[in-house]
Amino acid sequence: MALRKEILLFAISGVIGFVVDAGIVQALVRGFEFNPYGARVLSFLAAATTTWAFNRRYTFSGRSNGSKRRQLVRYLVAMACGFALNYGAYAACLALWPLVHEWPAIGVAAGSVAGAFVNFLSSKYWIFRAPKRAPG
Image (cartoon, rainbow, N blue to C red; front, side, top):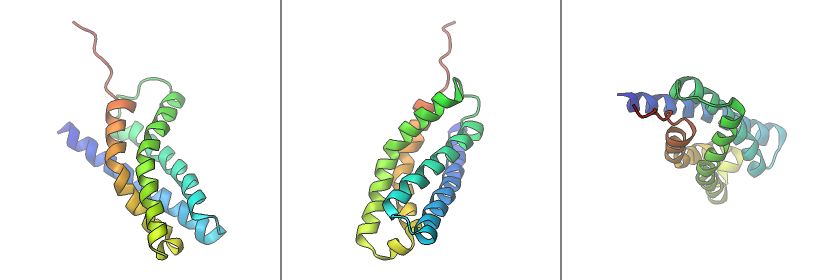
């Protein structure tokens, strides 16, 4: 039951992260004429910070030991692995479909699906792993 709850909350976090990611990339590309590749790096950092805060507070609450700063850095490093898949899918969408240049949020959606599994596993088993119990 606990695993299902974690997966559900992680999915909610992912939706929130997607809204942040897609909203920022869309605003930067369409509103400020940023390069869609560079805009995606900025939107990822904002989304990853948002999902870290949510996951720390809700998804993996009680497992958040250590300093927040160190945990955030570890989270960003771990998410970078998922982001490699995520960004690869995003870049492929940009290369294959001209529509994604107008609507980069489409590419963000494809990338989010690609990186979700890696991000969940790294969060559960590395960033927010349960504290080790003393032998007793």
